[in-house]
Image (cartoon, rainbow, N blue to C red; front, side, top):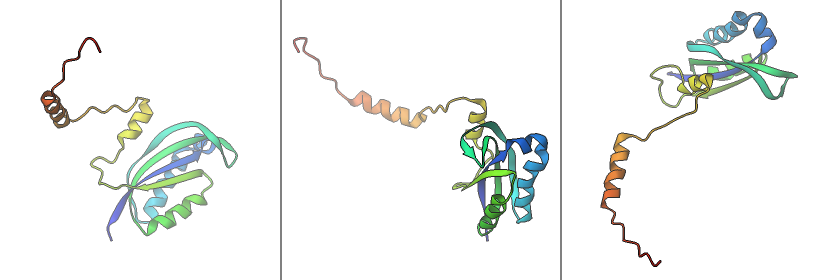
Length: 144
């Protein structure tokens, strides 16, 4: 069975992460590897105030992990993280297309705080320019 690539976002208890960051974040990697998964990238996203309290915590440390795991093992993985006291919440998304580099540019933008900017592809620009050149613009009467 082929393994799928997943993105896992975890919210850690900030107090426990602050006291021993390697142990708390290491639990994520060790649990995934225990179930036969492969860690592609695992790193700190940021620490921030939560929009609403989760298990009476007002602050959380966000941790982002990309990993490869067999689909049926995901249910077991979710259960392992639900009973882990260091993890307030966990979210898993399956990557639809393969990752050329196992790191999301979205995460880098969020860390740097820069907005998303996209310029149109050159082929699109040239097609738009060709259409605009073919359009005849009627002269406007000054009386109107």
